[in-house]
Image (cartoon, rainbow, N blue to C red; front, side, top):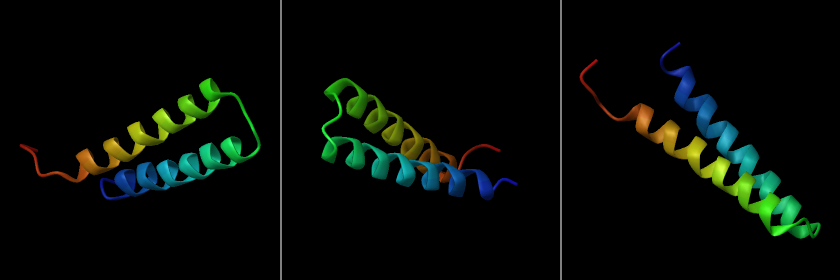
Length: 56
C-alpha cells in the first residue's frame, strides 16, 4: 500500500492540472482556476515528499 499512495497523489495532480487547464481554456473565473491549480501543486508535492527517504 505504501507505494500506491504517492502514485495516486501524482495521478491526482495530473488530473487536477488537466482540469485547471480545461477550466482556463473555457473561461472560468481566476479564483476557481487558481484553487484547482493550488490543489494540483499540493497533490504533486505530497506525492514527491512521500517518496523521500525518512526515518520510517
